[in-house]
Image 1 (tube, helix red, strand yellow):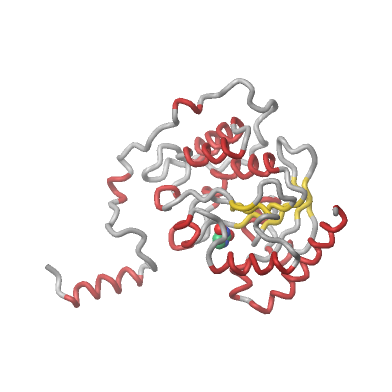
Image 2 (tube, rainbow, N blue to C red):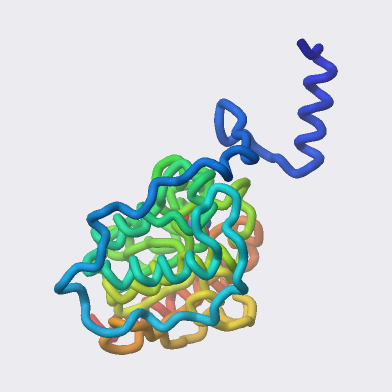
Length: 279
Ligand code: URA
């Protein structure tokens, strides 16, 4: 049995290599997890008659062919193809959520506690898209319920909106461990679900929150400080017409950089003004 100083030096070593939180009561042996088969695609998910006509949402350039990550049955290119097929079959938000929950092509699912699909009103005019669930969202299974969610609620209230008048989702439905930034492979694997999500909701306005969301949705390389506050358009298979897009700063960024709140507030007024033209 280790004495206290052994335990402390083991703990210190974990902190030094970047572990910043415990995600489960018991350790996981990731070495053996790779050999454990994950549940395969449910029988009921086979292609059905009567699903939306038309080709699959256009695929972004494929990620380089890579072997499956430990614990995953699919490599990167198979994951993207599987996500596109599942997303295409989903003809309602309920079917899309079930497809996301059944998807085994993203390793983040292995470490997440919950799948975080969406919150708010799917009939709302505004669809907000964040980056990925954080710790609170992972625990509660809902987007933007932690500190940045509280700030987002205050920002929305500033222009007379709340969760009954917006719909909220994320680029990724699973929390990256320790809130690290998502990788391009993780984003590419899950992107077909987001594209279908936007097509099914068909909002009047799309608001990416933060750089990862803005760059992914707009397929651009500029940072959020260049993209924010400008209008763009988003098209994807299944949308009758392009949706106006207004990227904004992420609430978590605003918590770290309160000076930037003035830009965020300006962008909110831009959105409010455009909404009022529809009233
Ligand atoms: N940050 C995000 O981008 N999304 C959430 O749901 C929470 C925090």
